[in-house]
Figure 1 (cartoon, rainbow, N blue to C red):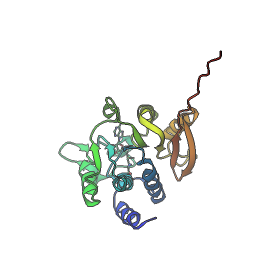
Figure 2 (cartoon, protein in one colour):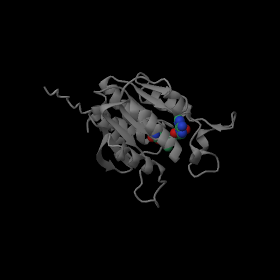
Figure 3 (cartoon, helix red, strand yellow):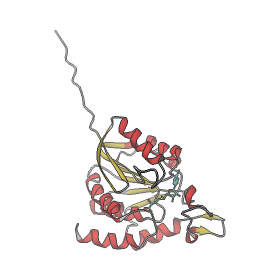
Length: 219
Ligand SMILES: C[S@@+](CC[C@H](N)C(=O)[O-])C[C@H]1O[C@@H](n2cnc3c(N)ncnc32)[C@H](O)[C@@H]1O
């Protein structure tokens, strides 16, 4: 990997989040490829760990990364739950608010000219979305309903050759929740994607080109 990548990885290591370094490196490399097709999107940015890797590659290629997060935290990040982090809790509103931490990350990483945060629910952001995408990274809500909604809504916007990437795919149920895996397998069964080798918990699919069957007129 190039020197830019080393700087990015060192920076990302300082950011709170749920992404392993080999997953970040893969996101960076795939984004360099995907950004030749169009802009990229991630659902679930939290404090910006994955956004640093994807955003840095977008910046190199001159395209935008849209990050979608309501910043109120997923079910497992709420007070009393396994992944609750007191630094993300806003006493005034009595809610999680990870937006200030995302903004700090983007400022520190010099990515404010490239990453456009959409502070809303995935289903709201997609409503009038009309821009074809080179990459969709799904790491928002981890319930079946939420992951399925993200897959069904956003994969439609992917360009042929674009990447659909799921985080937290656990082949062993003892290691993690199975809802993202069930949705990943549903995507595979659709026949719309080619499967690439997994990297840690990243499930990576590539949208197939549309095959145009020429009609022959018999005379
Ligand atoms: C696992 S965290 C994302 C981690 C991040 N990708 C990283 O690298 O650290 C999941 C995030 O998804 C957000 N989220 C959950 N459901 C969502 C939804 N339906 N729409 C938008 N954001 C959602 C939560 O607020 C939370 O910040």
